[in-house]
Amino acid sequence: MFSIKKISLILLYLSSFSAFAMEKTFNKIEFLGNNRTEESVLNLIVEINSGDKFQTEKLEKAVQQLKNTHLFSKVEVSITGDKDDSNKIDVKFNLEEKWAIIPVPIAYSAGGVSRYGVALMDYNFLGRFYQLTNYFYLQNSKPNFGSTFVNNFTFNLPLISVLSFNYVDNKNTIYNKNKEVGYYSVNLIQLEGDMIWKFNDYINLGAGLKYENAGNVNNELSNDEKIKNTQNGIEKPKSFDNLAFVGKGGLGKIDHDSYLAQGAQLSSTVTSTAGMYQGNDNEDYTKFENTFLAYYKMKLYNHTNFALRIQHGQSNSKNLIRKMYLGADQIRGFQSMQYSGNEAIYSNVEVRQTVYEGNYVSLQVVPFFDVGYIGSDFGNAINNQSLMSYGVGLRLPLMQLAGLIVRMDYGFAVTPENQSGFSFGLSQFF
Image (cartoon, rainbow, N blue to C red; front, side):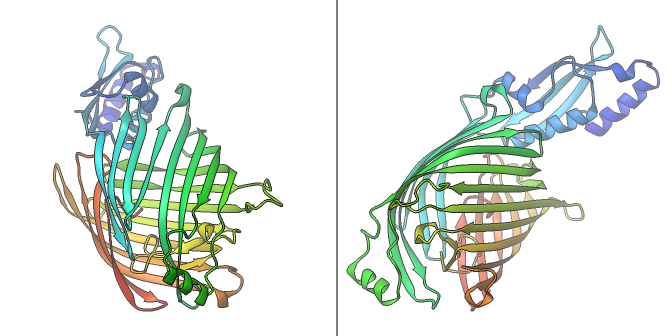
């Protein structure tokens, strides 16, 4: 097969013999090895049409866009000149498909919280590159379920539409500022719909609506747990039933090549009731979430990824259900939801070093470092808490299954106190 570099050399050679080399155009676009995805959708993904001016940059981008779908284990491209017109270039994408419909076991354990269940994930629903995920799991023996649908080309436009439903039945262990234990339980229903416009590969902007209903608060607590809450000053969260506006934005791009990634992206979300519930039993609130992700494929070490996440969140809510929490889900080695506040920032750094790569499974050794800061007022350091941990983990990317990676981490917390914990999941930590 021709590589992109070989294609460039061929074009350079042809340009020395043809005064019309700059007028070469794409002709036929074929996708070989594709059995599950509509060709009209693949054409939207590669962004190449018959009659477009031929550019090697477009081919490079098209190959990467196909890899970013996670639908193919191999993507190669070859070109030939049309037999009747040498200025017309035929393109063939040679593809090997992954399994796109995957029953995925949900297995997560960290910091005193365990989740076990199953999700049915279809990365190519109806052959239209829709993503459909349905899940059911038990979190500490409580049932949770939901569904998410994503249309990446709504109306055949660069418009992403997302619909999601979640039912949460949780009983959580939390801690006050004196590290005294408390509890709350809640049944939470969430419905959200968003529309996101992709201006180009690097900028997107969207909006949506989110409905939330929280009920049966603390109904699952025992009398001893309620007494413990009273002794330690843990207030009962209020139930709520409200509608909020959602704004979303993204800047940057991350490219994927199997289990490796390259690039950087900043994503921001604001959720606000926008004053609709003043004087109502429901609480008005505004929440900001910002996530920066960066990945770098280290050239000195084969198939090794440097990975960085920086996450910031802020909520003006006084309700325990809507506060910010830092624990095992964010910083490994701690208990789940061990620290709370109205503002939090944390970062995770990993070096994902591949020590074995096979056709069906690979192995990565991953040293990591996590750090965080949380409080109710970042300007008053006395009431805030710093967290830090380090550790090592293993990753087992399953090469023929889209997006499935077995993760095992062990973290050692060093600030504010020494403790440790095991973390397990079926995807990368971030």
